Image 1 (cartoon, rainbow over the protein chains, first blue to last red):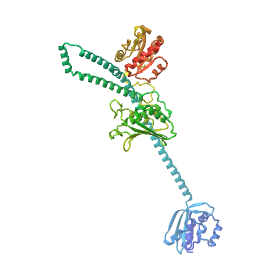
Image 2 (image 1 turned 180 degrees about the vertical axis):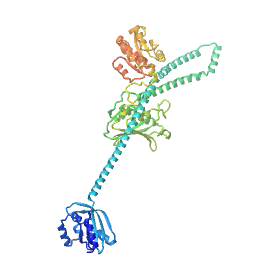
Image 3 (image 1 turned 60 degrees about the vertical axis):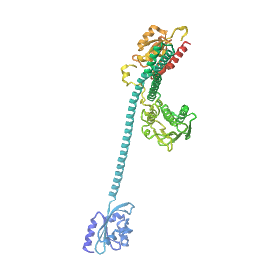
Image 4 (image 1 turned 60 degrees about the horizontal axis):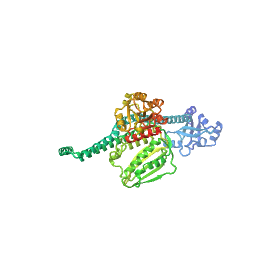
Amino acid sequence: MSDALEQVEQLLEASIDAAVILDEDRRIVFYNRAYEAMTGLRGRQLKRRIEAGAHCYEIFPITICEFNCLGCKAMEVDRPLRVDEILAERGDGEELTLIVSANRLNQGLIIESYRDVTADARIQRRLKVLLERERRAKEHLEEEVSARTKDLRQAQAQLVHQEKMSGLGRLVAGIAHEMNNPINFVYGNVDFLGQYMEDLLALVAMIDESELPPALRSEMDARKSDIEYDFLVEDSRKLIRSIRAGAERTASIVQDLKTFSRTGGGELQEADVVAGIETTLNLIGPLLKNRVTVERDFQPSLPRLVCNAGHINQVFMNILTNAAQAIEGNGTICVRIRRTDEPEGIRVEITDTGAGIGAEVMEKMTDPFFTTKDVGEGTGLGLWITENIVRAHGGKLAWRNEAGSGATFTVELPIRAPETARMGLAGGRAEPPAAVPSEAERGDRA
Amino acid sequence: MPDGGSRHRLLVVDDEPLNRELLRRVLAREYDIAEAEDGRAALQILEAEGEAIRLVLCDQLMPEMSGTELANVSRSRWPGVIFVLLTGYDDDPEVAAALAGGMVAHVVAKPWRGAALRALIEEAIQRATG
């Protein structure tokens, strides 16, 4: 054995890494103490096996021995090689993680060393798990925070909406009430005006039919032609009719606003919406009679809804009335009701065979006071109220034209309406509107 | 028209002069009309005339005293006087309670029609007279 080899062996003996020197046949010509400890074989046992000519891979097999012997490779390429994270099994069965390095010595010898990094690897794995856990926790926290933020934003938006609606409701109720007296003057007095005028006209007719001195008669005739008497009579009657129609229309707008801003009766209750729709169809019977056929397509065993039943009836009353009025002459209204899963509830589709919705109407449909009906026929509040009610119920209102002709209105309602459904515009306040200045000034209801 | 040619006397209570004027126009042909502009004035007239006032037509929302308050005060002293409330708030709980408790005979929602109001008053007086 050369001095050089001896020196190497001395160095290896002192190394804390396990090390062997192998000959060309992969038989061990030297091993250090760390190697002995690593194989788990007792000193003598190890020695005996080496003397019996056991190969290195038989004594201490590691995962790369079989196909990818590092020693052989190092020989081949004639330079030191190193592989990290090699798994091996110690004699006592414990699994080890090693860094293996191999290098070529002179005379066809190979030096291989094994550093046990099992503890490091374990710590690293543990660290990795911990880091991963922390990352997930952080991710979860972020999700949680973003979900909570979203909830809060929604709640805030709902509160703002509620507050706005409540203020608007008080204002509307106050205005509606204040308008009652002036409407009453016009409404009540116009009939008298009409009656008085007819009485006066009768008097004039009486004079016309009486014997008059010819001079007076011709003076009267001249005067009549000056003021266009016949036109005046006819137009005065028209004026009175249109004043009455105007007052009636104003009264019905006020009535609509009062109904919607009404403070009482806003309790949420379980209701059979399908039965409500049937009742509504009965109520609008006169609009449909002998003219409009109603087709019913109801899914069996539809759920009952917790809702503001009076308001929901108003929704279908408005949509069905519109559908009936959209049909000129004969036609069909189809009412389709289905159960929905997400969210759990029902979807009501009401399709008419009318002329459909004009492009310019589509957008403005639910604007307050927008109407396509003739003067006196609609207040322009129906669909606005409808949309507000549906929204307050956490539902959706949509409309579309059908191919060919007709339109479909779709109302989606959840099985349980949120608290916002309690109110109309009034925000569910129990006290009568107090925010109207004139009422406050009058100081009534102390 | 009541028997014996004597006309029933009605008291119209409303703080809005134009409303009183309208009520007088609607009812003056058939009834004797007294007017009061608020509850206090109405009580003064009732104090003086008692149940000679057959029926009180009264606005609900008035300064000082509401229609139902006036009805409560006067019904205990002059139980024979019939009360009819005119109101824009037909769903006011106070009004509903007064109607349910028999304090007022009728509640008429504004705006009202003359013919309907006349018929209602005639019917209320007839029923009370038996």
